[in-house]
Length: 325
Image (cartoon, rainbow, N blue to C red; front, side, top):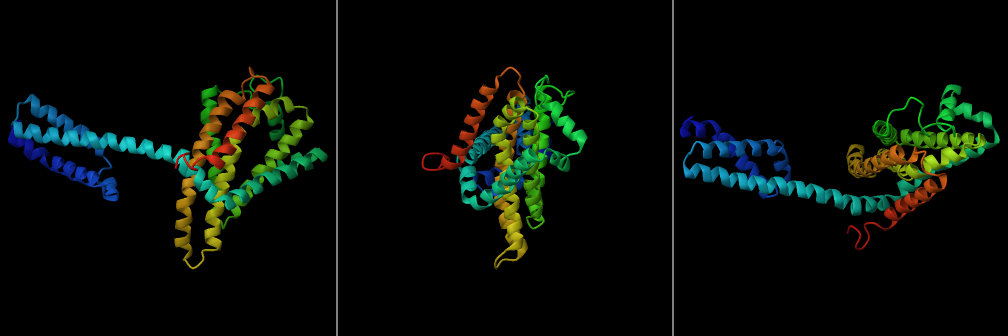
């Protein structure tokens, strides 16, 4: 292909790529996001054109033009990746814990809605064991008994459960499903979030009392104490995000409800970003640590206490002063 034909065919692509570069270099973020959605693919295509121009010994002016565009594209491509990583780290070490502290009222209310029904059902089922069947049918109760039987090969799993890796994926899917329902329930003026928080707390309390009465305390509590630090906290935070949505609908103030809901959703979504990270951590601990039969109960209690202390200190201290500020 002659150079004139080559330029005629691909010049519009180069011009579009250069326009995207100007937007990125000028930090016109909204426009750049739209125009640069296929930036990496465009960059690879440009590098291919540069290679062809050199191989075919096209004019030095064309080679220099394409080379300059490729260099600018390389800088932007890796600059954006670095910025993404930096933004993620800023969120983890500063923005997320600060956001939780700022929304402490909803977080405190959500925690109460999760833990108080759990405590109430624990005491009730301990005193009246038959109440467990008001929460679960006999088949499900038998499943849980089998999962936490001290004679079970893998504690906390059904007998036909898969490998640690497959269970890791299952736990992520299951936990995110629970948290998303708790969060999305806030759109029902907060009633859905209240229901899912109270139900999950009550279910946990009822099961704990039932398994304790069966003398399965050597398996159940060591299993849940570790990953529970992340999982239970994440469920409470997803409830807090849902309650914020519900409150925006119930008490929008002087704003129209839709405007108030959008403002609340921007905050709630950021909370959910942190929730997802915590659920992934919970799934990892649950799949590869909690179910292990090689660790003595005292070891799991020690690690569990450490993880609970870490979560508490993270939300109390991170993002203050030198921590992620």
